[in-house]
Image 1: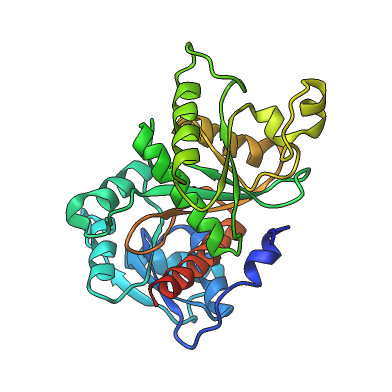
Image 2 (image 1 turned 90 degrees about the horizontal axis):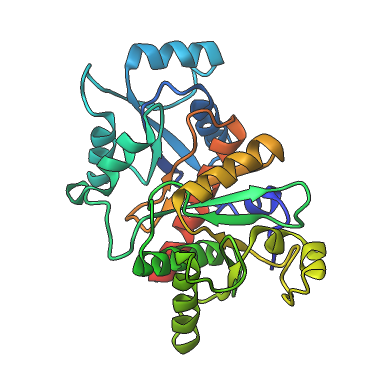
Length: 309
């Protein structure tokens, strides 16, 4: 099974009579509000808005959404809206946490803190899905938001998180490329050594239910012609990979932003490995991206619940 486009994702939204309660931390973001209320119209979420009531209502009026149903939780001046949103999640009144009009570092600092009660025995990492014009299916990428410079153990956890996220979308055995500058182990490029260690460990005992390939350079992941010209024998080059594991956050973040700006990609993303799905997009993200990130979270939440049955 392959995800050809985001329509493939939307078709997998779980049918429910109990929409998921999305707690938006920082509720004044225009496109985030558009995305949430679009998801509510489609019947799978209910908005719980945490932030400045007056400013939020003003934005809703500008968008023509003020008459739509929602729950408003006032955040007093100076109050930490992320902690208030987390409190709502922990009280049992929220199912999905969503970053709103708050800086990423500020938001994640509160999310990953031990006292947030959102941590599990898994590491938290961000998984993006992108629709690229010249790639035949959706392509996942991790981690562009949470883990800055993954250690060996963190990289293994990131791989497992991505594999599980793709399995939630129907992939039985996803194929993941471990991106590096070069496709051969080079002792002057530390991440190639780390990738070799991961490949050896995975061969002895699978890290996750997936196939790993690496180290591999970006052109060999995306282009069959590059693989032909370099005499690189990989059956997945040019359209066979389901996801890319980046060497570090800076690489992944730059890659996604390049896709958005230069390739006019459509993306969505979420933090996985937490107790609840966390929708996390750029504050400048379009309505489509915020909506799709909620689709991502709803499908992931449904899959995780089924795994526990």
